Image (cartoon, rainbow, N blue to C red; front, side, top):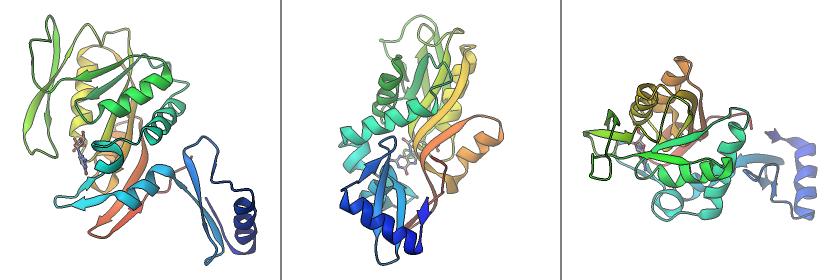
Length: 234
Ligand code: 5GP
């Protein structure tokens, strides 16, 4: 949302006067720019990406300082609450993710929704016994295909599943998880992602198939030194 000109300037002064830096559902922050006489509302997550994200070779965005290695717990809670808000009317019964970087976000969302989180293991281990639901995923970051597995005890035909992950690029991880939901004969409520690299097309391809995909930040353009976000309704 953008207010410019005289109105923007006045609003900016007013907000500063009352020291209002947050409002709405906690997921929005206010950035004031007197120079351009406008008040720009941008998402907290987008701000952190702009401030701390590092662009690595292979179109990999590193967000280790707040999401992928060190976790900003307050930001994580806001992400979880926002995902819960987006799916509040959908009667979701389980959150499903993939180890390991999706687990923290999936946990935050599931906690906010008051439901369990299940994560797909990347290798069959002795911890998995009985009937196993499996599928294959090509890893964006490791450039190899691996099996993912979930015990059929944890995703069943009675479940309405929300798939959550940290990143969405080409959509291979989500497609593998969707196959697990299908094999369990469960219902798919949709997917929720922290950061989608929209320019890689995986999210829009899934949307075109009628799957609901909500991403809190969508990057539509990424160069060595700049990022452009898709504007979304809040
Ligand atoms: P996809 O399967 O959609 O191609 O890629 C999504 C998966 O790859 C996510 O589970 C995530 O862990 C990883 N991934 C893809 N792109 C990035 C990125 O730019 N940064 C990080 N940290 N992980 C990524």
